[in-house]
Image (cartoon, rainbow, N blue to C red; front, top):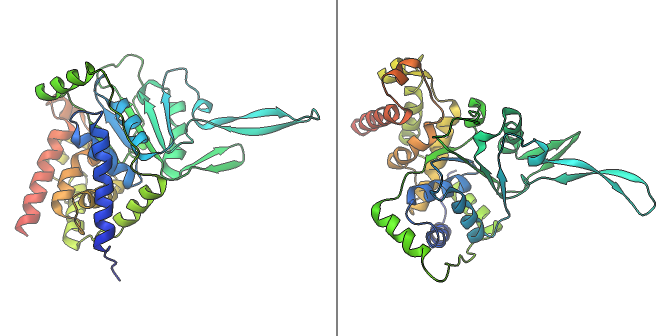
Length: 334
C-alpha cells in the first residue's frame, strides 16, 4: 500500500526547508544550486563533496547551515600529517582517586551532526580511509568497541581543483560514498557586488535557528513517502546503464570515452536525491525533471574516463550532459 503524505506534513516540510535556505542566504550570496544540493544530501542522509577554488564560501556554507539547524558542527582541517586518531578519536588512560588506571575512549571531531572535511585531498590515503566506515556505516570502531554516530550525520568535504602539489586523489571507493559532487563556481558581477557591500556593512548578519534535530528527521520521514512512478525509475536506470561501456545499453560516448561507468549506487542516488528535490518543490511525486536536475552532481564522480577522453578534451560533465539529454528525449518520446 502506497502512503501519500497529508498536505499538512508536505507543506510544513517545504516551509521548513525554505526557512533554512532563507537563513543561509543572509550569509551566502547566490550559489542557490550549491545550497540546494547540500540540503538535498542532508535530507537524503548522504554526504557531499564540494570542489572549487578558495574563497567561494564552501566552509562558510556548512558553518551557517549548522547555526540554522541547531546541529552540532565540527571542522577538520586535512593536512599531510593528520592521523586517523585525529578524526575518529583514541583511547586515553585515566587515573581515578585511588590511583588505579583505566582506558576510556575520547571521541574525535567525527562525532558531530555536520562534519566539514576541509581540503580532504591534502591528507594521506590512510587518514582518508578513516572516514570510510563513518560515512558508510555511521559507526566508528575503536579497538573492539563500535560507537554509533547520532543522526543526522553529514560529511561535507571540500577540495581545491587547481593545487596538485601535496595532494592525494581520493580513492574511487571513497568518492562513490559521496551522494553528490558539486562544483562551486565564481559569482556573477552582481553577486560579487553584493558580497562586497556586505563586507563593508557595520554589522554582520545574524543567522537564526529555524530547525532542530527532530525536525530534520521529520522532514526525512516525509521525503520517504514521495511517490516514484515506474517510468521515472526506468529513466534513472537507463541513465546509469548508458554510462557503462561494456553494457549493451551503453551510449556511444561511454564506449568511446568511459573506462568505468557508474555503480548501482548511482541509480539509488538519482532516485533519493530526486525525491528530496521533488519535496523541496512541493510535489508528492518524483519526475524526470528532478532526475535530470540532480544527475550531473550525482554521477560526475562515479565515472572514470579513459586516456582518449583526456586527449580529446572531454570531461565527465560534457559526456554526461549528452547522455542525460538523449535519455530524457527518449523518455519523452516513449
